[in-house]
Image (tube, rainbow, N blue to C red; front, side, top):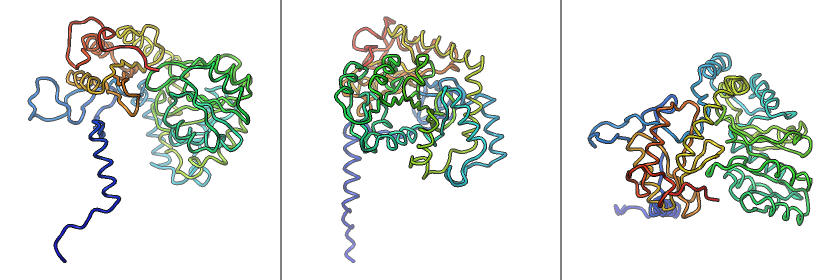
Length: 416
């Protein structure tokens, strides 16, 4: 024994260098605890303006960063449904769905989801990410070819990598380019698209997308995770084109999980071949029960009122940053430079408004942005505070006289 420190293993050295690379790029991140029931709570490490730096953490913060679009995570009916499921079935499912993990509430939820989406059948997955991996690994086999919008979600990108089909990535929203690529493609085509894109908040043209898919006998896969305010499928689309509708239980419905709805035989194939379904423990009964209660609310007059309130918030905030007519609760304010976007986010947080800066690699270089997400349960006062702070925001992170975020360097355009 010489007392010398042992040499670092190749893996230790690689991990350390990889961490240093992320740190050097200014992209090192970690979770921050947000102690909240609803959009306002205490954020770990946050100190409001004027508080002594030596004082305690956790000043009040209003989050404009959540995907709880209708506020159903804290809705009393949804919470009661989850409690009842806990009392009846316990905390976990205890097995995968094809073993002993299926509870009656899973089947009830799948029936409700199929009815909501106007499809023959639906199947629930533990996450939306798993749902997309399942669809693309099961249907994207040899002999198929996937056509994917370039701004689709990471779960779609990873699903394409997992499948054995060829993949063509078409320019964002360019359905002419998609049509031409489909005309040149052999095999069974799959067209897959977000309906609301998660970083830009813009919507796919579903009428034309359905038309293009039908013209080429393509299977159309739609990721409707963020489509709380639409767009909706055109009348008659289900049946005129083969459609699989993927969604989450985690956003509009305020629970946790994902699902795919579509023709019964297609869903049955997913049940029998989708590895993320077969080889993982079923969603908890409480999550399923919460989602089932949320679907009932969503399809009721109260659900319509919540969507109307959310749409009114979207109209106000979007107009304040020059995005009149914006159709989703995801509102980007593209700033460009990473450091400026981070400074702008920090300036808002100092005022108790949590609007995250989104940077590479999540978005392309030069398009770093503030990503605002709104909820129906934001109060009018909270939205007023956000608008006032946005219109006074300077791209360097300080305040200026109110003149509109869309002027100067803080652009309000949506990158594409």
